[in-house]
Length: 469
Length: 101
Ligand SMILES: Cc1ncc(COP(=O)(O)O)c(C=O)c1O
Image 1 (cartoon, chains in turn orange, blue):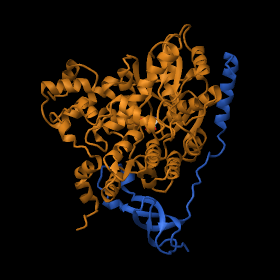
Image 2 (spheres, chains in turn blue, brown; image 1 turned 30 degrees about the vertical axis):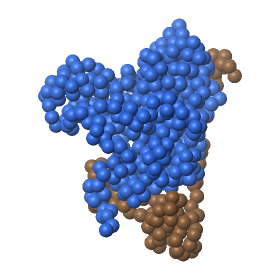
Image 3 (spheres, rainbow over the protein chains, first blue to last red; image 1 turned 135 degrees about the vertical axis):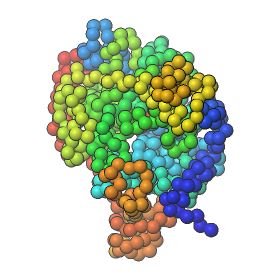
């Protein structure tokens, strides 16, 4: 008998569909209604650093160059106190086969799918991950479907996302495009059920383990090139996989560099709003993903996300759309490297973070991404104007997301904003306990301390203040 | 007319506005959830007809035929004068710091 394919029926089968599509039963990692064994989840699938490296090398992923941004460093020093301005290095992740660090995740996910005998892979993504999965599916010989949120209700697409659709098709994938809304997940599940493909989720343990090599390579390259470890690593943060994996790799290399997450400030814009959809001038690396995923990692397309940035992040900073657009221009004009804007989130933050560090410090920006028609400063700013956003030179502090994009009128005006990370930590703790609806045990408190890189005292205080203990 | 075997784009309504039960902002609630994909047309048809296509992975999908031989027209956009201004600022800074250029 054919299964009913209406919304309620498909969503009702969500757990079974997901289990079949991942070949992984998350129940075995649960240790209480609140806690689960993260380390066990990460090691269960057998992707050690060596194994990930072996898989990625086989498929042309990783071992990207670490470039020194000499002129950008000089410019940062011009605006820093005397003796300040860390050396800035950039991991050129655009050198991966599909043009971003997402190839690291896709290589492992597709490899795993193939090992388990799946005929194809699917991913729900409007971002670079689609291209990465399509590319790895092509390399490793599986079929591929990418489902993306692309258009507003007038059928107007975000130029950056339209370009990603083109790239996925160029790499042999089918692309299913939708208008705005979380029910994309229904279409995704329904096709997953019909095809029996593998869910190459961004948040699987093998996907995140795929990013570990990025952090590890950064430390090894610093040691080789400079004879010392980086002091700070800045990671663009959306779903949190970049930050999680990079930090894990840095620690695996025995390096204690400060880990800074950076997102584009899009506060005030609703991510599920049809009207706000095309008022954004960037489609990833922003707080619209960064904050909800950091504070509630388990609302993704897997029961337990392997991306848990608050476990690793020491600081969280934000930067404006105008600053990342100008930084993209700066990288091209001053360093001769033309890359896509979203990947410059961490570099834009790094430009001002470097000014807080002494000249002999090493600051590494974890990535770049490819650029092309649609996915470039020029069309993204033009699109902003078409949607009534004011684009001007001035002080980026005056930027209002959805109303203006302010390009710094002088490099002196680049200034990251420190986000209140303790607030996000408290938010994670509260959500985790409320969701479970039980009184946390002592081991739950310890779990939540690890989840938030805090201690049991911090967790207790948070819960007491909110009447949850 | 589109011929059987043509590469085409189809459109469908996944959920009508009144069928959307997810937690949504007011503006999105008023919109249908729409979907597009591409494939090879399974039988001759006119634009606007309900058709079936076979996608590149071999899936059969139904929808309204909206485009025969679809192509991309996203671009580098029109002139953005502010970018030229920014480049000027950056070049001046570069000259001042004696960058390696
Ligand atoms: C180029 C680029 N950088 C950074 C990110 C952020 O990564 P994550 O979602 O793992 O936080 C993304 C993905 O959204 C990306 O495409």
